[in-house]
Amino acid sequence: MARAARDDLGLDWLRIEVRGGAGLEPFYEQFGWQVVGRWPGAIAVTPDDRRDEVLLTLPLR
Image (cartoon, rainbow, N blue to C red; front, side):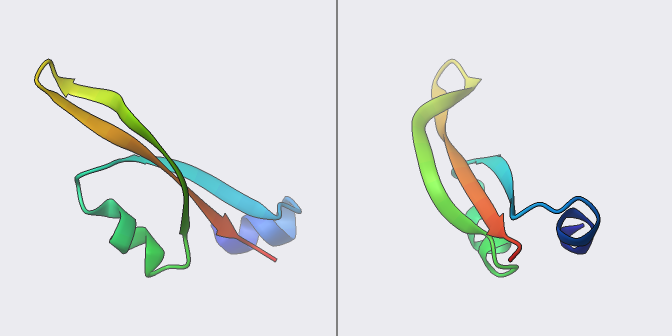
């Protein structure tokens, strides 16, 4: 995916958004993704459970 985005599409970076509190940040970081932002309480899982939305980017250049 990263190779195609860089070589075929000419992109400089990719962006994803994940739900906080699920242990996804360390998973993506091991593949070079970097946390660049967080929206506290942006995701309502249930009425009593709000999670951060975590923004990550993957530099391609």
